[in-house]
Image (cartoon, rainbow, N blue to C red):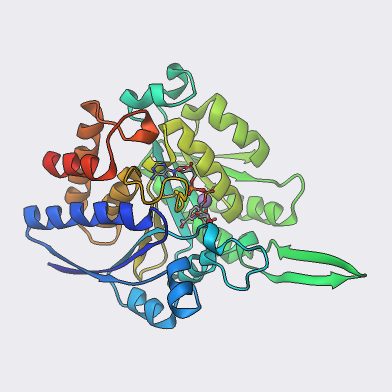
Length: 352
Ligand code: NAD
Ligand code: IPM
Ligand code: MN
């Protein structure tokens, strides 16, 4: 099979970790007889430098015509001016919207051998295996109006938190479908005691739940959820939530696994190419040093094999190789070890 992947390494450590994932995919191709063609494109700060915009229409088109899109990370201090009219992150948001990938799956699991890399007590981490389903194309990130103006002589900024019933239903429905193959429990996280959009979220979620009697629904306020994730993380299985809450809670959840650098994600819509990226950012503090942990990117490639390329066995192979490397005690710097990106990637390739 010939597979066409749009490759958007982005900024900072983005190119470093995507290079590792590409090597892993090429190896999987050799092993399984499939051929992966990568079409490399700019996104984020590097695209601003080259084209004055964080994502060109041509790149969007190439992504839309691909079988899947693989992305590193965008952003960095160079483009962080609070008065800038173009920002790297804008490119990523535009891409998610253009691909209509409304559901962002962020699995969080704990390798028992890495328990010591987490600040939590090891017994708290036993049995932790959760799947966060984050709404990705709506909510506070996209609501209109947004912008800056002078109101009554005072500089003022507006963001709008807006959801309609359809946007809520489709992502919650997916969470319930996914829960059927897991522990049959969905935790829906909102702020329904304060936000109108959360009260609509809760109403629609109850309607979806009524159609899935075999799955238990638990509603949880986001402040409580942020505490529970640390206090009793093993009690949560599938967690579905809005765009902003999902962003924050998954960085928090990454602490359970031991490092931001470990967590992958898959962004899916209704048909069309999926978007795959680690959950971490461009990590300017370590960019260019060759020490970024590539596992989040490599595990994102495994999700791509499974969800977009219909190669689930190859996806399992990649995940097993990562597990084997970690089980045998190999650690990158973020996990307290000494290995660099190239070395740990080499070990994953050998394990494959
Ligand atoms: P970050 O995720 O880039 O880094 C947070 C911390 O985690 C840093 O100390 C970093 O060194 C560490 N870290 C992250 N990934 C790692 C890896 N693979 N291996 C080892 N350590 C890793 O968050 P930040 O520093 O707040 O943001 C930097 C830039 O990245 C900002 O411009 C932000 O907007 C952007 N960002 C982009 C994405 C994305 O493209 N999907 C995601 C998050 C942040
Ligand atoms: C992420 C990032 C992005 C987000 C930013 C860079 C737009 O933090 O992918 O988690 O908030 O969605
Ligand atoms: Mn984030």
